[in-house]
Image 1: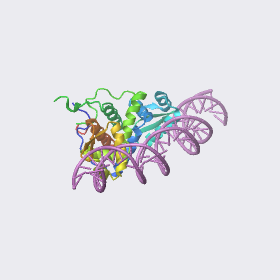
Image 2: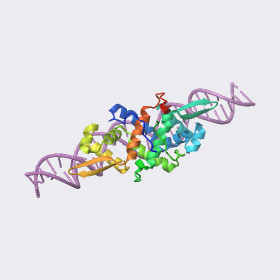
Image 3: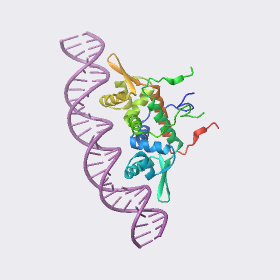
Image 4: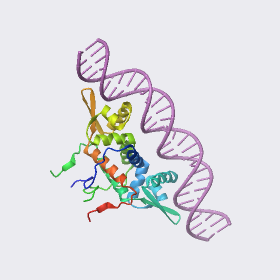
Amino acid sequence: MGHGVEGRTTPPAQLDAESAATVAATLQALATPSRLRILTRLRHGACPVNELAEAVEMEQSAVSHQLRLLRALGLVTGTRQGRSVVYSLYDTHVAMLLDEAVYHIEHLGLGVTDIDTTA
Amino acid sequence: MGHGVEGRTTPPAQLDAESAATVAATLQALATPSRLRILTRLRHGACPVNELAEAVEMEQSAVSHQLRLLRALGLVTGTRQGRSVVYSLYDTHVAMLLDEAVYHIEHLGLGVTDIDTTA
DNA sequence: TGAACACATGAAGAGGTCTTCAGATATTCC
DNA sequence: GGAATATCTGAAGACCTCTTCATGTGTTCA
């Protein structure tokens, strides 16, 4: 059993400038320790801001700024619940993107060639 | 048939600061239009620098600088062949990471819930 | 309404990133 | 060796990013 692209239609054709910009912009949202930790925390379930701040050890203000960015990119959503605003990942795609990214990156350059472990 | 995480062992547990930094550093390599285009070009096969520069419409010097960075992160390798240096993606993981990233990002926020199109 | 709590936001500064320019290094061919 | 080709590299500047500080907005409760 492999992982990753399987029933995918098109392999990522050569990106035109526009697509590259879009993809890059989104990837940048994952490309910072703070946001990455925020997202992986949310990967485990919705969470209000102050709890989030505590979990990732950042100031509440900093977290808010990052959430704003993530919201703008459509990666998370926040809904008010009483005084709190509860955030969660927007999509299954966001969750998967996170999973895939962490997985592949943690297996990079390890000489692991488990392309086909069953052969 | 789905895509993405399937035979994966661990879902990305809450990242500690160190892992977050590593993953973030690697993701940043994909988080720029120029590098993204370089990588997707290499995704289609090895390529010498000048050809690469032409393909992605950048100055050769700029490409070299980015390749240096990508090399340092273990995402690409370059081997001398005559006067040229031919670059290629380092790993299958790099290729998959690219594929996954582009795929998921291009399906973000589209309301597409094709988690299981076959069911 | 006023106080307390939860979050958002604007401004500003430290630090980093990407490109360009100029020049260095390596390889081939004569 | 010398010229031409292909790539690398350092320096420098424009630009963006992330955090902090201070303050603004929204909500609950008495």
